[in-house]
Image (cartoon, rainbow, N blue to C red; front, side, top):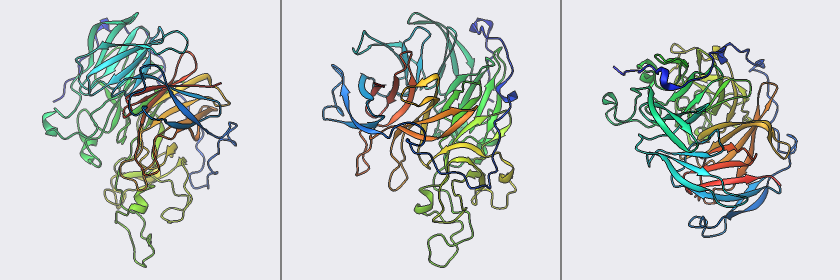
Length: 458
C-alpha cells in the first residue's frame, strides 16, 4: 500500500484556504452538435502572420545544433536568442526574486539561471541535486515545490538558496514501484499551487492504454489534490492519460494539457478507406494521424476526461474521412476497443473539451501569461510547449502555441514559434515549456537542443 505523508506545519504554507477552483462557475458550454467556426488565422485573431527570423546564439552558446545557422518562424520583428545551454532542460518556474529554475529529470537536479545585465548570458548553477527525476516546479510565496517521480517535496527558498526539505506527498508510483515491475511510460510528475493554496499534481498512465490505472491507490491517469494543510491526496479529475501540462489561469482555475492515446481504432461502422467494407475496429494510419485530439481542459472536482473509454473527437462530421477538423468545445466518442457498448462510461454525458490540439502534438509544459500578457496584440493567454509526434506520418511539428485568454476561457490554438522540424521530418530542437519572464520576454526550454531561448518583441 502506498503511503501518504501529511505535510507538517514547517511546510511554511502561508496561504489562506479559499474557495476551490471547482466552486467557480464554468464558462457557458456551446452546443457540441453545432458546427464550430473555423480556426482563426493569426490575422483574424488580431496579430500579424509569422515571419522567418534567425536564431541568434549568445557568447558560448553556439555549439551544436547552433554551429550552423538556424531559423524559426516567430511574430514579425521578434527576436529569438539562445540565452543559455542547459542539457536536458524540461519544466520552468520563476523564483520570487527573478531567477529562472529549470528541472532536469535525467540529471536529477534543478538548475538556477540568473539573468545578466542587458543582453548577456545568465549565470548558471545547480540549485538542488540528488533528486529522483525532478520535473514539475511551483512556488507559493517562499516555498518551492518540486515533483519527483515518487513524491512531492517542499523547500524554503531565499535569495538563490534552498533549505528545509520536507516531503509533502510520498509513495507516488514510478518505475520502481514493485507492482509495476519497471514498466512505467509516464513516470514524470507535474505540480501547481492552486488559488486555494492546495497542491494539484499529475500522475500519468502506466502505458498507452491501461484501464487498471483508474482503480489503483493512488489512482493513476489522474490529477490529484492535497489540501494546503496537508493530508491524503484525493482524485480531483480522472481519465487524464498524461497531464504533463498543469497551470492556473488568471481566475484561479486549474488547467491541464494532455498527451492522449496512440493507435486508436476507427470507431464508426462506415467505410473509411473506400474499399467498400466497414473499417470499424481497424487501426489505420490515416485515421490515427488526426485522432484523438490532445485536450487542453479546465479541471473541476469530479470531472472525467474519458481515457481510455472515451476519446475527444475533432471530426465535425464524425467518422467521415473528409470531415473538417475542429478543436474547440469538442465532444467525446466511444473508444471502440475498450468501451464498444458504452457500458464502461457514457461518453455523451462528458462535458466537451474546451480546447485541443492536433493528435500526437505531445503538449508538455503549460503556463499562463497574465495581464498585460504578450506584446504584439496577443495579450494574456496560455503558452504550451508542443514536443511533436513520434507516431504520426507525416510527423506533427514541434512548436510553441498560444491560446488567448478571453472572457474567462481560452480561445483556439495559435502558433507562436515554429521551425524546429526540417522538411524530411528530422528535428534539431523540441520545445518543452514556455513561460513569460518578469521582463515580458518569453523563455522556452528545449530538451533536444539543450537550450533556453529568450524570445522578445520589438
